Length: 97
Image (tube, rainbow, N blue to C red; front, side, top):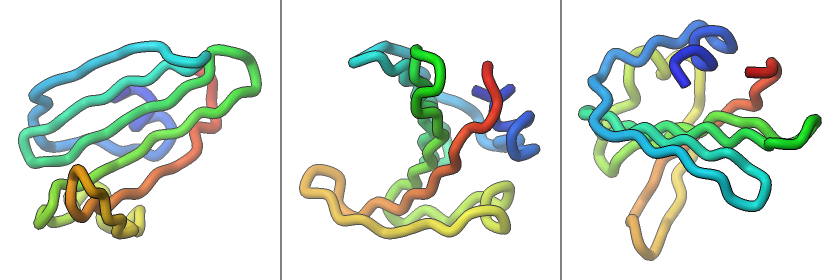
């Protein structure tokens, strides 16, 4: 994940990663990393050629946008029955990794 963030957008996350998970479902490889700051990043990558590929960012409720993301992305607010108010953003991955 750090390689994709650096190569695609020159992003280096300053917060310490706490937990990571990686799994495959319905032809997609999903990787999630949860950070000490409350930031969660996921990478969705289709296993088949030409499929969907994107990086998503989610901020915990009340969390400020990290400096390394603030000038690059706008974060939309969403209401979730399970998680309350979520702010998130994403970008489409252009390269192959």
